[in-house]
Amino acid sequence: MIYKVFYQETKDRSPRRETTQALYLDINAKDELEGRIKARKVIEEKTNYNIEFIELLSDKHLDYEKESGAFSLTEF
Image (cartoon, rainbow, N blue to C red; front, side, top):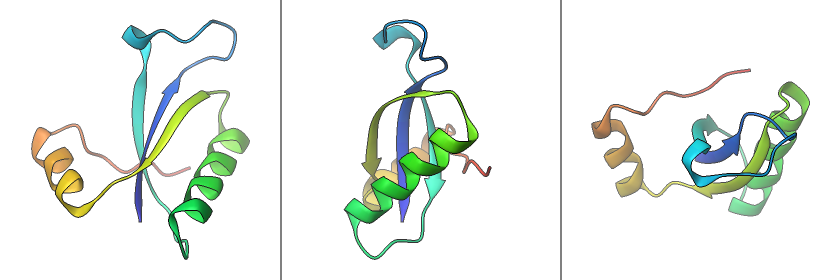
């Protein structure tokens, strides 16, 4: 399952839409909720990011992200 994670690079400042960034994670999970929990845990352990939202990508959404050129899986 591929998840798109929206985040701010630091927890020190209030989130601003203009500085929101995204990364993509491939998470092995039995359902969407478990995947979101695992994604959050990995990011919190490996970074100091302020996570805003974690979204499971549908096949169509994933295809769109790949076509846009912004898609690259993040590995920690």
